[in-house]
Picture 1 (cartoon, rainbow, N blue to C red):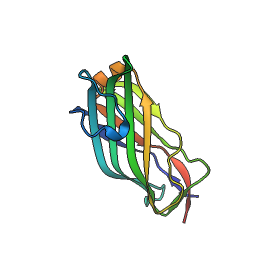
Picture 2: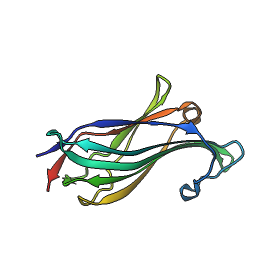
Picture 3: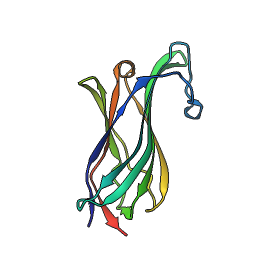
Picture 4: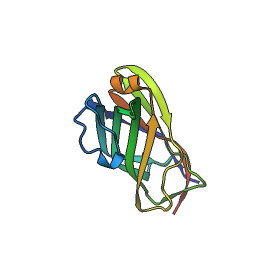
Length: 154
């Protein structure tokens, strides 16, 4: 049975204008802080070195805003995933992420399984994580970790 190997890609996050957020429903106010980053494409290899899964258009958005007058901070992780001649067994494993400020680790995030019902097709995935407001103020990098997972070869 093939096994996907853990792989990590680093996404730098930088402050940006609060544009392009309409599809996320963000309640923007004058004091909103928005940080964005992107990685274009990376592969997750199997134990024998062949490509078993592909990720593309990895977009990270960190937002610190007010919702109903209360502070709110969230990290959105969005990407497309493709099972490259491999299919998920059972529920799959999802991914992990680590938020950093310089050399300091701020916090770890973990997801449920990826939305990847069939092999050999691109599927959009979107996850959101509530984080402390101070994390958004400090974060400058996210490590996206595609976790190791047993898969079925096609």
